[in-house]
Length: 414
Image (cartoon, rainbow, N blue to C red):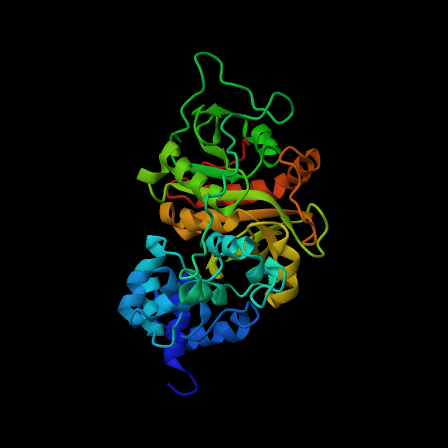
């Protein structure tokens, strides 16, 4: 195939699940290499996608999974040496099994962050230059493998950091609180037929949905606050901020709603605020794909947005302080919407529903220069989401109409 490096394009497809699915049908034998190359030239290069086999993310995949290091690197990554690795084989393992198994991939992670933070010589020396934003995560992992363990250093977070508090009960009485169901306690969260599950991070983002969907609390006492509409078509879960909480909330909601046993009958939407460098506050954008800053990976949505809702790259960050650094380092982030949940929402969402039944909508609320998210009960956030509701409703209506045998059941009564 002239002018096409098939070996590199295979690694390109293996590395990115959205490309492997779109251009290969999840089978190497079906890969459209010309299409992959055209995508990279038109979009991938600007998004800083990696089109080579040997790279730091794959080296760290081997280092973080000793069985893979033994199989495809001769065990050499145990001492920080990745020169013997079979890069394409490692990437194929990640595409075929590792991603689905949830194996750690890439170099950055809480364990190596804690390692750098614990030792001033690593944080202030040549590994980070005094700032976590400048750390060479692969070099830090190699330091631990080559000498840190022998020196008796502690790797990882020990004791582990406490998890962020979960919203285990409905918001307090007031504008942010839905009404409780009359009679003997909250109703079941189970959707009576095909419907839509909404995942939001905070009570402020949820408040307009409570009002328009006419929800009541359901499954009280669980790890996440959950609500269901009176018509049984909508369920809402408040996850708290962060990719891990969003992922957990999707799994929890899939069981309560019945979606886990009826794949394809329930659509999913993540709605919340985000940060953008120039768009006006209140602007609504749908996410075309998501870059997970903690893993250095991309994943794509395929659900079409409603008319008038533009699509953007999403960037999910562990903490707001990362946004400005990513925006300045990554060209593709110059027009991105930053948030904290979309990557986790999509990671688990694609396990419980087809991609075309997943969507994420973000309302611009802050700039990437912010160092903190707004308060979970910020009334300004509630007003911004309320302002965006007409467009959000159009997307919800479109997703419900696209469900099998559900074209007549829309969100027109919301």
